Amino acid sequence: MLDFLFIMVYSKARKVGDTMTFLEKLDRLLEQRHLNRRSLSQKAGIPYTTIDNWYKRGYEGLKLSTVGKLADFFGTTTDYFLREELTDPEYSKTQGFQVDFEEMGKLQKYRALDLYGKRAVDSVLETEYDRMTHISQREQRGWITYITCYDLAVSAGTGEPLGDTYYSTKLEIPSERVPDSATCCLRVSGDSMEPAYKDGDIVFVQRLENGELREGEVGIFALNSEGYIKQLGHRQLLSFNPKYAPIPVGPYDRLECQGRVLGKL
Image (cartoon, rainbow, N blue to C red; front, top):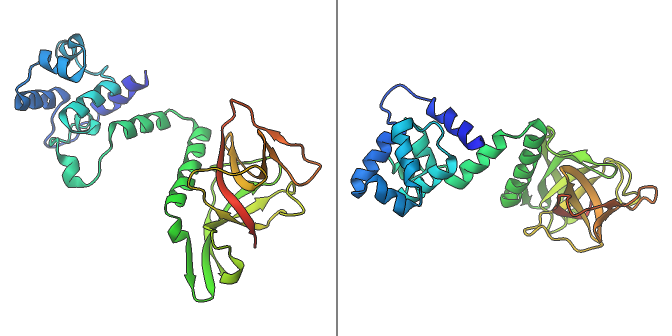
């Protein structure tokens, strides 16, 4: 159903100027490759009746997965077939940007999410982008280190929703106070990690390339889209403050470690 709706949106998005329909593009590629519908079916792994029905009944019900097979076979991209203003199958090589089949599938799923789901995805995307570009998060000039501090509160309590609006700023800290492996900072919210980490404390975080943390270490976690600073236990997240019970992590929970806590400012 989502495939159908996605294709419908593209099929109606015509632009003024030189355009080509899906079938016009397909015919041109078939002619260039000296193929017919039968041979395309055999080589691309698409049922002949499916291809034949595009010409007899139209292609508004075209599935994204089928477009992906065509794009792979002809060495182009799915957006070339779906966007009528794109008339050159080699456009991605000259434009320097393309959306491949896998990426378009993810975009399709993202558009189907509600606001809460989109915020959760946005939060993970920002975190991973920061991890991959962490070099720019920290800069040392003489005795001063400039490090990014995110105001997305991590909970030392019952959990903070990830993905809400937040901002970042650069802190100027004497280099001797910044751990060598720290890549950014986060602000603590709540008292469950007292006395080590109090409400409002700024903690140094090391981004983890593989997301692995040993039991007993303190980390930044996303559990079912809520952020925590906790100690990692066996299938549970632990607090230092005894008035807080452990948070169990079940087989259907989504737990991600977003960094190791190295200490506080």
